[in-house]
Amino acid sequence: AKALGRNTYSFFTPQMNVVIQRRLAIEEQMHGALQRNEFELHYQPQLDVKNKHVTGAEALLRWYNPVLGNIPPDEFIPIAEHNGLIISIGKFVIKQALQLLKKWQNQCLNKGQHHKYTMAVNLSPSQFRDTALLSFIKDTLSELDVKAKYLELEITEGVLMNAKLNINDTLQEITKLGIKLSMDDFGTGYSSLSYLRQYPFNVLKIDRMFINGITSKKEDCNLVKATIAMSHSLGLTVVAEGVETKEQLVLLGELNCDFVQGYYFSKPLPEELLLDFSPRFL
Ligand code: C2E
Ligand code: CA
Ligand code: CA
Ligand code: CA
Image (cartoon, rainbow, N blue to C red):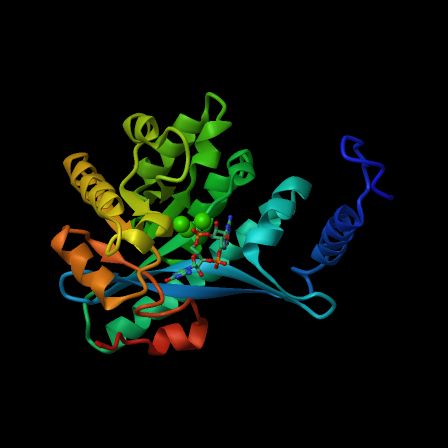
């Protein structure tokens, strides 16, 4: 359509057409992608700020499609949410992540180390509407012989915002099983504080947006400092996301942050590289 003048709304602009085409192509390719083994998990190590030991990893989904190439999760997950495929994709993620966790923990045992790693898995809102979610997680944990306390479920405010009444029951059940609950992207939404009061979170993840500015902006530094202190007073541990520099790491240590993840130590890694990973110190 042609622009008809300043105040005329023309519905299909060429740019919109491109957006719609792309979305349709993603939808089309997404059907069957799981069966064609196009999804893969990468794992970003998480480290203890004080002793720099690896404590666990976050599983992050990757999709390579022969027609479309690599499609970032920020682009395809909202679409999978919309068309319902997130339910089966989400099960794949949980299963793969726990399988790798088992392998990783066994590797540790074989080296004579006692430490047990944790695995953090992201869950999206519609996975919570799946009444079979909990039994699937329970079954997978027992099938693989992984203790619930080594699994951490990361949820964002999006899960809680559109929550129906029974969301709290689900979250309570999750914690009753011993699974850890983590509030992801803290600080980017609207009423994070009231959610912390209402729901049984164990871990708080400070969004990269704030970590980015801590060494240059006094305000960001103060916000992060206050967030860490508040989390500790509520009995939560704190993970800082998106740590990219040594200066950020040092400052986070001074602010008593518990755990970090970010490019400074490692990008998300394919399975084999996670199993080989040991942090280097710059
Ligand atoms: P998220 O859960 O907030 O994940 C952190 C994102 O930050 C990841 O992007 C990670 O690769 C990136 N990141 C980590 N460290 C750094 C750093 O130091 N600097 C910068 N610039 N970025 C860093 P990714 O893998 O593209 O994932 C994007 C989002 O997609 C995730 O954000 C999460 O919301 C969603 N996602 C990924 N995998 C899954 C999944 O299996 N299930 C669901 N429901 N969502 C997922
Ligand atoms: Ca996350
Ligand atoms: Ca996050
Ligand atoms: Ca995010």
